[in-house]
Image (cartoon, rainbow, N blue to C red; front, side):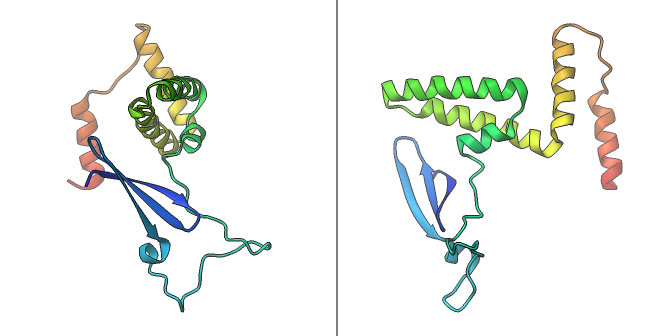
Length: 152
């Protein structure tokens, strides 16, 4: 099958396989994923007794937007809205899925680095693009430093 995407639906994962012209959807009980059995305890419930989903998809538009900062967030919102409008007219989700894929990667990098480091990187890129003299380190030096840290 194609590459799976996961979305938490209550306590059931919905696995969606995107292929050339076909989409297959498979529901997978969390008990199958995490090894729950009838005799094992279930996920914690808040005071009102309703189960609280603890698994959120990093591929939802909201989670991607929340992982972005500043101009990247604004650009994502604009591009996502444009592609959704286009999809509504054409019934083709290709553009929407491409925007989600692209910005999910940016959001993951932003969250992994931290917002302050990501802002510094964006500032450095802007300075490089405007022709400012920005100190850089050649790739072979980075490779040597990384190998030294890894003990190679």
